[in-house]
Image (cartoon, rainbow, N blue to C red):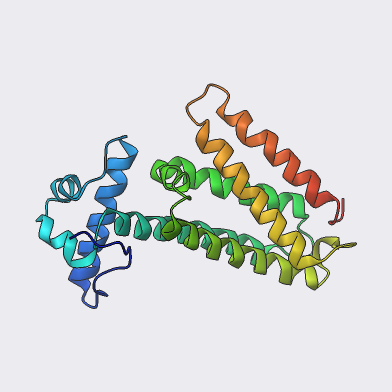
Length: 205
């Protein structure tokens, strides 16, 4: 009987267990990057481990997707947090905005599987992680703007931050849905211009 949950079966405590999970996630990412179907058999073969080892930690493939997305998304959020925290009063918001965009592109380039996971957002197990990460980024921006940084004016910091992050999620999907097109960069830069124009309504120009 197949489990419907994507939650891990057991929480790893030993270094060996953590490494085994990392091997499984790395194998799944490699398979996705190659455009192949992710199955427990394929993951086991790529990671060179028994299939039973996968089921010890993950109830199904969705569980692997969930943990891989959480890992990659967590790396991205950490980079964004660093940019926001290190942006002082002399750093114009447009420059920080550019650095955040560059961080996203770095992740896109280094981890093609991340885009594949993003387009799976209709699945509640993945959507909940993205929703939580969006909220974390929005809260960071809102706190910054509540303190009057970036010349914030004429709006509700929390609502503007939430809207900006949701707009960026749309930018992400635009990029990944057209990443194989010759004009893939344009599919990223054009909606980014719209997001920047939105922020300029509330931030110092």
